[in-house]
Image (cartoon, rainbow, N blue to C red):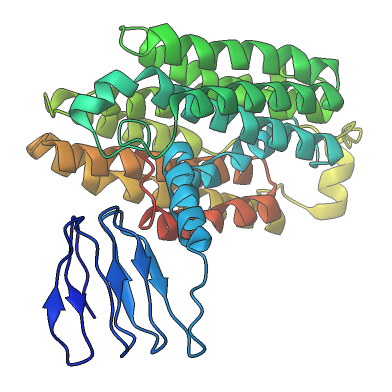
Amino acid sequence: MVSGNHGGGASSADGGVASGSDGGVASGADGGVASGADGGVVSGADGGVASGSDGGVVSGVADGTAPCACAGRRSRRSRAWAELLRLPALFSVPGDALAGAAATGSAPGCRTLLAIGSSLCLYEAGMALNDWADRDIDAVERPHRPLPSGRVRPAAALTAACALTGAGLALAGRAGRPALAVAAPLAATVWAYDLGLKHTPAGPVAMGAARGLDLLLGAAATTGRARPALPSAALLGTHTLAVTTVSRQEARGGSPLAPLAALATTALLTRQVTRRSAPPTRGHRAPAMDTGTAYALKGPRTPNRNPGQESAALLTTALGAAYAATTARPYFHAALNPSPPLTQRAVGAGIRATIPLQATLIARSRSTATALLIAALAPLGARFAKKVSVT
């Protein structure tokens, strides 16, 4: 087998090699492999394999036929789009709408699913638009990204951002007017961040507002009311603000103040979300029993320990601890050495920590099953993040 990048040799029946004037390669009767000056690859009847300068591979088969290289090109194209859209980060999205629904005290329904679909579309629209807007900066700082490397055309990325934004708004509209009333400013915030606010002091605030609005979208779609979910939206938005602040120096490194502030924010949020609180109202409360009658029936008053509430409280504490553990070490390492690799690792951990934070918010609303479902997304997101970076 012989492979070349710009020109090659020709193998004869006795294994000799020669090159033609055009730099092409020819194979003899033994079925050797030849590559032309353009890096194309041809395989002989013996099934030899060679790769050209573009990295494509074509392998022969026993009957002398050569399959098309389309499958390899499709695989590379899919990989490029997965990097552009940062697909593993999608695992951090469904929990927003479900946390919003839980904060209202209602079980998720069909409209909640529509809100999740809207969130996914708007999130990916922001990813595509982000790389389109930063294509000149990435050409210098991160030339391996899909747009500066030429694997995805800028026009295709912008078209995808527009199409995904339209799809997200359409899905929100199907969920009802209250949902659309939240999705519209959410989409506007995403576009404003990517096209102008990202490199200003208002950038982290805008990103935090977008994540908070995404949680409110779930509440508005589920019940038509977003107000009960405002506290949860503020907590989730604060976490996102901290992560975004750290991400602003992931390409060149910078000050340790940002990761230190994010570490302190994580500690405060952990304490806040694990505080015991009353479950959301799910209906009318039963009339209070007369204290004298209660004493006569049950004797001295003892603390009311509902097993369901106790298990929810324990789950909330465990998930809160998982949230803190996900970010604590990467933030601390980035504070000690704010180099680009450690800062990028801290940002990735912050994005992944969104999932246990969402699960904690859901668990403290006594939606145990939903909290466990969201928590199960964390290891999946971490696994796929090893294949495609989320930063």
